[in-house]
Each structure stands twice: as structure tokens, then as C-alpha cells.
Image (cartoon, rainbow, N blue to C red; front, top):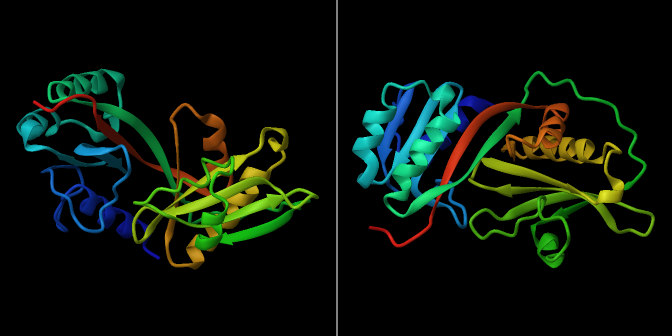
Length: 248
């Protein structure tokens, strides 16, 4: 599986880039394409993805010329410096938008050799229909129940009463990119369950012919540690925006 090609193709689709878009800086006008990743509460007025030294950006025509001038010759690697985000926030605010979040994302390390873990808990898998039957569960990082990116499968560790105490879930954010999330009940944390379940789910998604990825906050070092130890490596960053007032 050529993960790099799959990911770049998706990012080009997400940001209205042509298939021939170069490595480096790509800035395009806002167009919604079938198959692009879209999420509830996130606007496509502005979107930026920094992946392996390449910037994939899409923005509304109201700030397109500014984006070309400001970002055209800048190094993508430093996009998330606070000084840059402050300037971006000010420009978005002029149009009634603001930065919603920035996230770091991880892709499978294809040189990962695995690890040994003797899980003392029963393991149970859930398909899409079974996931819908347990809506309202406490595992909100594992199961999101979003219409635009449905939960496809999950795996849980059960206690002696048959109740889930930890769960990893994966959503189909696009046809080929599926995002993994993990939740562990407080009293069952620090036992290796997050690492074990994420690893199980990652391998299952790869077997399905999809590319699993893992996202978290830049400040969430514990979550990043789970990603790395379960066979993921830091791969890209995304900057999202939201509407904050009536558009000018």
C-alpha cells in the first residue's frame, strides 16, 4: 500500500489542488469536491494542511489574494507558529471567521515491528450497526456518531461483568482515510489498554485496505505517546476554522 500517495491524493481533493500540484506551497480557491473530508462545526472558508514539508491550502476568494501574497514564499514547516496563527486569526475575523483548532495527526509506521501484551480482559468487536445500538456510551473520543464520517468499527476491553472499560473506534473520514480514537475509563487507565486496543484496530483497518490515522492535540503528550507506541509516526498538521459571526 502506497500510504504517501493515498494521503497526498486525499489532501489535494480536500483543498482543490490539481493532481499535478507540486511539493511545496499550494494555495487554491474554495471549492467543495465529492470525496473531500468535511466535518460538523468546521467551515471550509479556510483550510490548511501541512504534510511532510508541503502546504495544501484552500480559502475563500475574499482572502485568496492575501493568502497568495502572505503564504506564497513561506516555509510550511513553521505554519503553526503562534505569531503566524495570530495574523491568520485577525484576517479570518475580518470576514466573521476564526481558528477553531489545530491538530497533529499520525500515520502508520511501516517499519513498526509490534510488541507483546498479555491482555487480561475479554476483547469484543463491534460493527457499524452494533455501534449505533450503544449510542450514549461514555467513550466519546472513540465513537463520535458524526453523519459526515460514520463510525465503522470498534474494539473494546470488557471487565468481568461484560461491561466495556476501554474502547477504540474508527470513523471513515473519507473513502480511504479512517481515523482512530481511544477512550479508557479513569479507573482502568495506565494498564496498557489504550496501546493494545489502538494497535488491534490499526492492524484491522490496514487489513481492510484503508489507511488508519490518529489525531490529537499538540499538548496531549499522553495521547501522542499512545500513538507512537502503537505504531504511528507524526505526519501532518491541520488548521480548521469556524464561523463566528455574520459574514461581511
